[in-house]
Length: 193
Image 1 (cartoon, one colour):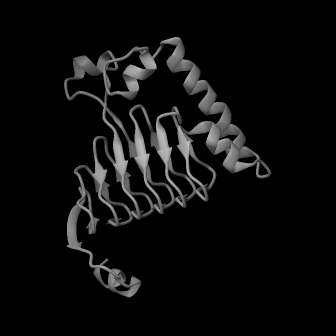
Image 2: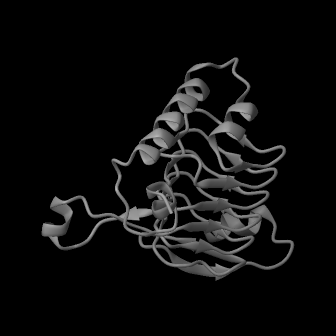
């Protein structure tokens, strides 16, 4: 297992290993093309940047990530402008997901012990966003979190724990506001926000 594979799996790794630096460099080059060339083929760039990029999915520039190859995006998924992913571990985004502007997904964290932080010790855990999730603008999804299918994360929420399917969460840290029902109308969601 090389250092990039160790990182991706959440194990201790050398961030200066050539294979880690190469993937990061490739991601920076592809993001530069995506973010600074309005005439570029965004779908082609996203297929090169990400591990998987589903049919009819779209990323609105600017977009930021560290590696790209640790991110899988399903079909018909939309990432609005300014989304940032610290993707040291895997990020799996399902089908029909909407992610609002300036949302942030963080797979790495650091120890509380300052002596370990001096050595830049990093602990990485994956993020999973299941099908049909809506994440509001400026929401933060922390490491190790799974957002259950059909759930809604309100704007500015900070999600530090798993969100069950069919749930509306809000706040910092995010808390369950209520469970969603089948065929919920947009008006019902507005009344609860």
